[in-house]
Amino acid sequence: MPETRITGAGAETAHQGLHSAQGALRGERPGRSRDPVIKVADLAWLEFEKPDLDRAEVFARDFGFFVAARAPDTLWLRGTFAGPPCMVIRRGRASRFIGPAFRAAERADLDRLARLAGSGIRDVDAPGGGTVVDLLDPSGFPVRVVHCAEELPALPEQRPLTLNFGARPSRANAAQRPAREPSRLQRLGHVVLETGVFTRALDWYLDTLGMIVSDFLFLDGQRERGPTMAFIRCDQGSRAVDHHTLALHLGPGTGYVHSAYQVTDLDAIAAGGEYLAERGYRRSWGIGRHIQGSQLFDYWRDPDRFMLEHYADGDLFSHDIEPGWAPMSASGLAQWGPPVTRDFLGADPSPARLREVLRALRGDNELDPARLLGLMKAMTS
Image (cartoon, rainbow, N blue to C red; front, top):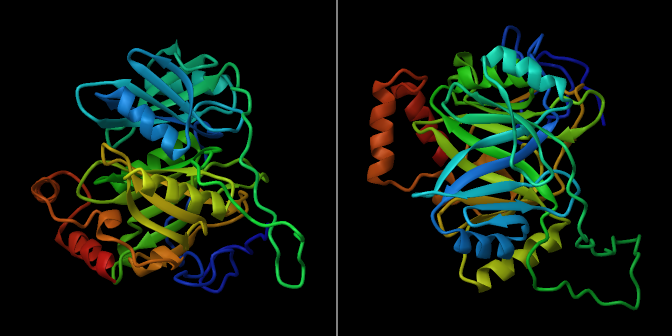
């Protein structure tokens, strides 16, 4: 993992290249807290409510989840890697995202958070058990930090194909025939959230959970006003971790954008996508390769219109890497792939979205007419 030789317009960083600036300018905001309360180790799971758990389970299996536990009103989903489950879906009157749960590095972290929040520590009903502290971020998302008692054991993997690379072939007298089957999800990678209080929310995740920024995005002509999107990773010191575990972006709404799940390789993405298409599910955007994070991606909508991503081959950064800075633009979302869709960008007009915009422009948040026009321009640039 290359180390940055620290900040400044001329600094050499891991972020140089397509649609990337060279780093922070003098006086721009840092990407980490000097003294965070704790440092979370990773995402644990995401929590949803849905009225039809049977339909949710059918899609989950088709997308590549495995069922960790099922009760009349609760569905726990997991990947193949050992560890906590990826998702819990509880029966509710309407389909909605509740919030993320992060994994504490040690049990004592829960005590620190409980003292900060003035709340108690309770047992969690997840497979494997454990304890949890309930928090609330500045956007209003319930955020849970959990210490798991036991890891779920690993499940059989989807083996990567053996590939021939030009002058270095490694496969002879054997044909490639990847099965047309669901991608076997390995683990939860990240979640992306929209918020009207971007700066407050970002500071909270850095100060409270000890996360650090991998990349900032800013609006064209508004860099002096600060970033409007941040890709945030966990800080595990010299151990390289996912480029982003959480991404936040400024917008008129407050809610879930998408979540991403790691699979074995490009063939797992493509064959799994064919399987989903054959069953009538809707692709939102893909297949392509991102810029920030570099991962291969493919986005799908579930029957409740939540967006989920298959991904592989993402960047891994240690704590040595300082944030990159780049302009926000639709063309800056991918190195290659089909043009980004309006569905992925959330740019399809609807009465509900218009109401969100009008409320945001009148509310106590960071969205003003200049910011809104800048976001609209970014979606078409």
